[in-house]
Length: 198
Image: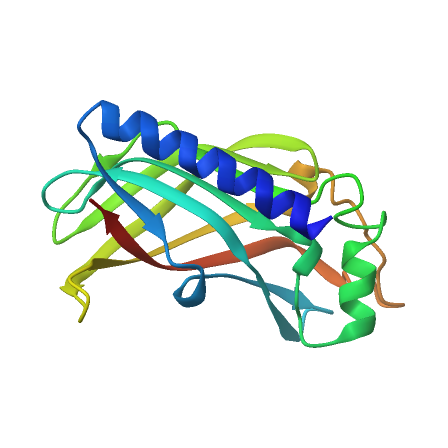
């Protein structure tokens, strides 16, 4: 399944890059080895559980200051990792993400709203568990650097908060005192390193 997903994503990424090149746009492709999507959720109202979901494809068109004009990304939900095997197995099951049916998480920007000092907002559509909802990312361009092979790298961060119930993740067991075992609100933090395509 993973090979099929990555093959599909590779074809999709190539198609997007070809279209961007034809339009004369600068395109950045995510560096999977140096990019991450992290989430945090409160457990029993007293502690936090952290996890990651790999970003398997990301492409953005950018202006001359590296501020994105559009962004698309795909994450591999089958590889969700909270550093605890039993919990990860449960999260992949039909009780939560049901990755056998919905193996990817997708995001597509609908607009970019520049601010100042490299900051910008990204309204877009987030699809989790087969449900698509609007979200807004608060993002920032961190800078660019040229590596030893002459490739230009650009760094970004972005954050948002979602209510998991909006995406059909409705598991809702409580403690005997009534606290949610898993909070409804989930924080998302993105750390992106992209490579400018020439």
